[in-house]
Amino acid sequence: MFKKGIIKDQGIDITIKNNPDHFLSPNDWDKVLDAKFGKIPADEYKKWYYNLLRSRWADRKEEFIDLAKEGLNKEIKLRCFCPMASTICHAHFAADFMNTLAKQLNKTQ
Ligand SMILES: [Zn+2]
Image (tube, rainbow, N blue to C red):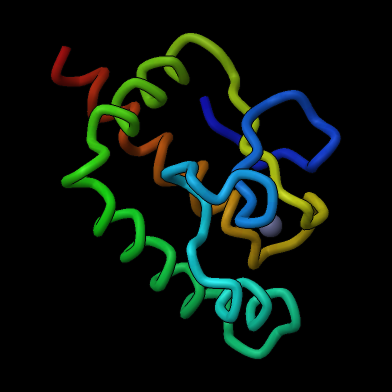
C-alpha cells in the first residue's frame, strides 16, 4: 500500500530536488513550482504528472513493477516536501498510481 509521506518520514524520497532520477520524481521545475504556488489547478498538474509516468513506463517498467510488488506486502511512504493536507502534491498522485498498479498485478498473479 502506497501513501504520501512528508520529508521526515521513512520511505522513498520522490522529490525533483533530492532524487531527480527516481521514476516517480517530476522532471520539470517550472511545473512543480506552478503547482506549489497555485498557478495551475490540481487536475491539470495531475494530468501532466500521469502523462510523465506513462512516458516512462516503456523504458522503466521493471522499476514500476518491482516497487508495486513491494507495496503489496507493506506500507510504503512516498516522501515529498508538501504537507499531508496538500491536495496538489505529486506524491498523492504517485501513491494512487502505484496502488492501482499493485492491485492489477495482484489480480494477474
Ligand atoms: Zn509534494
